[in-house]
Length: 112
Image 1: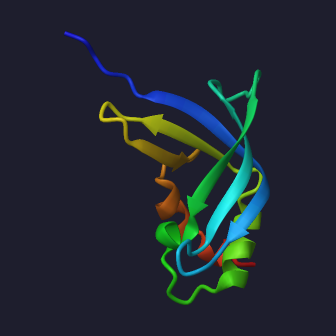
Image 2: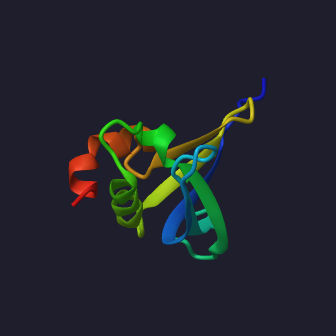
C-alpha cells in the first residue's frame, strides 16, 4: 500500500513585482520569491508568485492602499506550498494556517 506524502517547499517573499487592480483582476499582487525544498533555504531558486489578495482577504472595508500595505508586510514572510494527491496547491503561512486565514487574523497589524 502506497502512502501519499504531499510535495512541500518553502517560499520566502523577497519583494513586490507588480500590483494589478481592475475589474478583471481585482488586487492581484505578484511577489518576487525565493523557494527551496528545505526551510534553511540552502539552495534557493528565484521565482514569482501571484496572489489574488481580494480572494484571500475579501474586499469589504479594504481599499487599494490597504492591500498595498498588507502586501508590503508580507515581504520576508515564509510560506509553505503543498500539493495534495489531487494536484491542488495549498499555500500555508509557516505557522501552519492557510495563508488567507493568517492574513485575515493579522489584518490590524498588517494595515499599520
